[in-house]
Image (cartoon, rainbow, N blue to C red; front, top):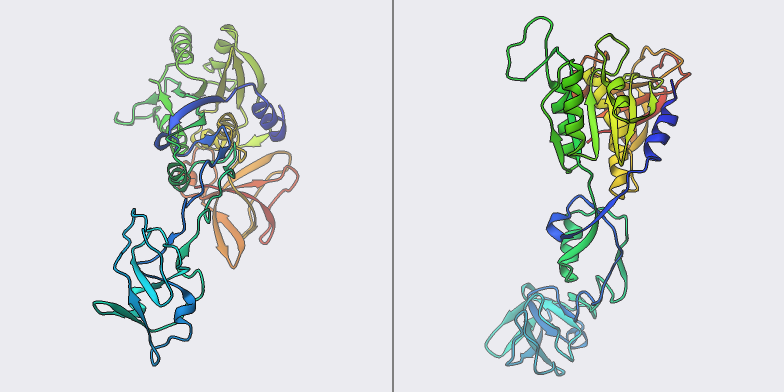
Length: 403
């Protein structure tokens, strides 16, 4: 049996290589850049108006106010967005301008329509403005030649908008591995079957698939496999042909019908570790098979989800080029006592609250590895250190924030 830290290091040091793909920008949402993005343009490319109003020389309306308006002559030309002005703004003149339109020569500011009154040939201005007010300058957002995003940055909707403004219709990103999910066990039945004594509905493949889907990546949910060595071998071999990482649930412990470990070794999978000093999820196994990897996850539903968070998710994120492998962490204070044994790391399912910048946590209720509602109610996983013992109210521990 190995420690949590050793198991995580083995998983993260595995040789699953990131795959670089060139994708249209809308297909890159949630992925990670595999290249630096350098701007070939200034954004905006010209000085332009941030408001509908009038392009003016700020010196011409210095001192203007409600009780002392200043009159400016309205130039015959107006400037809608997309039009290049042909004339300049001379002293004592102004020019009608729309949001996004290029600022004409001679003008250094834009007065909003709301601060003026217009007649056929002039406007009355009711306040003074500073030079540059309501003007978006060339290169104000992005300067030509600057590195806008770096390799390893995550792509969100704002990123995609900026990429579009830079004229980047396609970009290089780290693709996601294909994850396979396969439940095993004679006791497992489909979720729409009638529940009878000795049987459990297949929640594991659904919770795992949901955890993968939450990451926005591809997965394959295979039909469950019974505790039959020949059938299980066939299912596993077929599943490995279709995915990069296979998640097997059940059949990995030491019972008479726990066949997964022996079957995987019989097909040439190399066992990298088996059993981790943690609760829940001690009988976790990790295998290497050619250029693929296999997690033998315990059958208990909470163990399955916790092991995914602590091992599978970080591995997937690393293979996708991400620098943030684990969920966000905070130090949080216990709102009540927790029973906890020394000699192992315990991952408790908790509800986290934030008050005035401080984090607090309380139990979701019963913490057995079969109590799946403890995960459904949780927004955090508290990690109780190996030698901590019972956790007293007010103690601070590391908590991983979910969602």
